[in-house]
Image 1 (cartoon, rainbow, N blue to C red):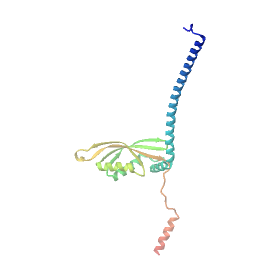
Image 2 (image 1 turned 180 degrees about the horizontal axis):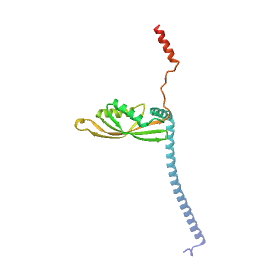
Image 3 (image 1 turned 60 degrees about the vertical axis):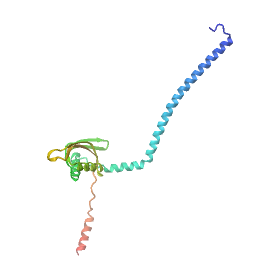
Image 4 (image 1 turned 90 degrees about the vertical axis):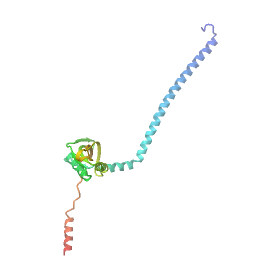
Length: 204
């Protein structure tokens, strides 16, 4: 095909082919570079957003720590030898009595240990009016000396003589720690004689 072409024409054609190949290689490199750049840009944006979130959390560290300490203060400390089912059954029965709801715990419940936090799931059979049930659930939610979470509740209407009342069962999750319980401060022996002397002085 190129047999009739002069040496000069062959050189021109070869040069054009070489330039075309260089241009094609450059275009392919540019496309690959553009794709890699877009991927890198996405990774950079994601890293930037993550960094902003981390910086925001660092800035709120004091606030978050205060909230954490506040929530942790609600978690009661139970001695190692104290039975969780007896303790929590008594606590919840006391709260139920205050809110006019009849509860019957179903021991034993399920105890779970996760890191330092312990959880005890207590199943209760209950009977109450709607108003008492609402008050009891609110009391569990807002209790300051413990952390409760109602993870399941079944409700059905009573019939016959108990018409107007509700009944069912619920599972309450109680959070607590294990360790040495804080004992109430007692009066020292030195304070007792002083009080007695004061009384004697008044009697005179």
